Image (tube, rainbow, N blue to C red):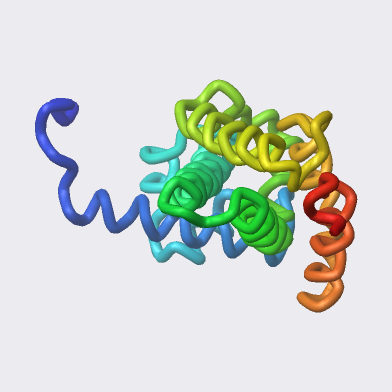
Length: 191
């Protein structure tokens, strides 16, 4: 028997899925992308069959972990745009967002590695599109006020973010962000 898509998921199924995703994030971060599904199930406190009912393959599980991360980045990006539209400086909002993403990416480095290794692709998701649109809005506003380089692109930001040194201390990560911000700064930012 299958559950109707119009009926809400049972509370235990929702709890199991949440536990599995939390365990997967933790195990991937601790053990790395080679962590076994059995180990994730044990950490989640569920049977392996339960894990496979929610995520038929390891790629599906990693894709779900990565999708959650992307959704969080999209939410943060949209919130930065809202603050800018309410009067915040475009460069300040972009700088804060980049700093938050770099620090979050550092703690999710193993998840990113696992996604690449397993081809867990979320590039066409609605959350990716939301994040891109919000970043583009911030960059365009910062370019208009001269606080970032006129040739800065979203691809440049992705390149910078994907090369964040994940194995450094928070102080070193903050310094890295400062150097990146100096590099993307426009004439108004250098005054």
